[in-house]
Image (cartoon, rainbow, N blue to C red):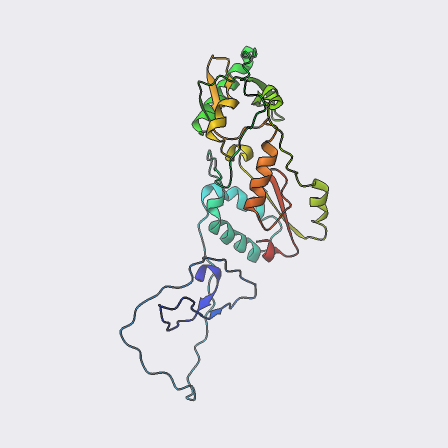
Length: 295
């Protein structure tokens, strides 16, 4: 309990009981939230029990000393998150934020790491099973190195794999604002054969309306969004694409460009974040009227 700034009383209990009550003391001036499944105490067997203290006897009361905040060591990949998040915070709030990051560090992706959800997967249902095979699109020589780099990166991250699929879509290189290149796959032919999913997305204007009156905001941005959702094994071959070097690859995770990807992603986000319906694709806002509730 020390890392939460709390003190817990020593208590004699029967370990065979299904529910055990204990006293927890918060000497600080700020509210502390204890989450479900938090380890609060340690059972220690005793050989004998001493006499019960007579409550009528004057006993000197020990003064509770101030419990120091847990000085956790932030991993290097969270240092930038901490520094940017501390702007405008008091010292007490900065320490609270640091403890929060230490506690939740497993939720943050490490450099080069891509998480994978187990709350759902994407399937591609077709109204026409005849495969579409498009010849590779001509890629200018000055873009080919960018294609090679992107394919090597996606393969190393486990997002694509070599394929022997009868399907083949074309790739197109799109230049981003920072002048770097993004490899996209043109799935229009596949989308024409796909049974459409009518699952609704939340309205952005309604999401913004719910933020009215809030003083603190939290936005959750997934590391690679769609690529963190697995594809059904039987549908991976439908996402195959040809490369300039002559190889054929298919996606292991849900790629951008599939017509029903947004609906699948929305379902998973709503399932993961049952406390809010304000999720829109990869952006999830939260609102609170105080810093402590926000953390």
